[in-house]
Length: 271
Image (cartoon, rainbow, N blue to C red):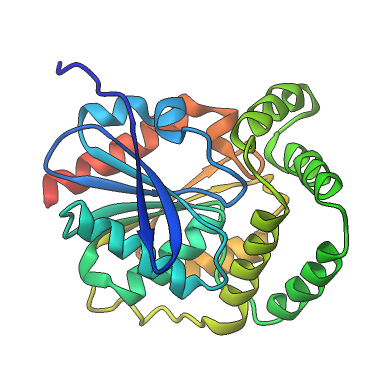
């Protein structure tokens, strides 16, 4: 087996904003890793290191912008800079929303799609998130970030026993997270729900395969929204974790890695 390569941190200034992204691995294929918005730490080394034996992994960290379109433009800039014409794509939570927009905006850049613990746009959610953002804007940044960490700990842990370990992980990944990042996250979520509408015919001409990953006990994506997502992708393969909260990869990283490896191995063989 080829020796595993450590992730390399790279940067790129795009339209006045600095993007950071991590890259690791080797091979003829690339996995674009679009994680949730609350600080990323080093997701390649922490969870997906073994995948780097088989595929190049690219993981951008979202800068505090305002719209999904800006995020899509930045991601495509990064792909272009790295000479990546097409990539397999994994999107979790907010990253899943971005991934669904990206595959519709640039279907020719996406080989396959994995959507984890995410949802389709919900029209009423946009105005609600903008109202919440207005409240957040008036509150102290330190208190906001701490409150968010506590909320994430509850939603990402599948049991009370897991909460201390999940909290340690959140503290690590959100080390640089500030109020400006939280407000930008609200902007992204509000923009997604306000301005994007999907149908199950959107990707009728796209040849890629889809894997939907969900948790039965996900408090942030309840059953009705999980079912709505599956109706958008009627041909998708679906894997449901019985437990895992909003982050089954934290609850059972080995199972998540096996799931991704199996799907990617099949997709790469078909490429």
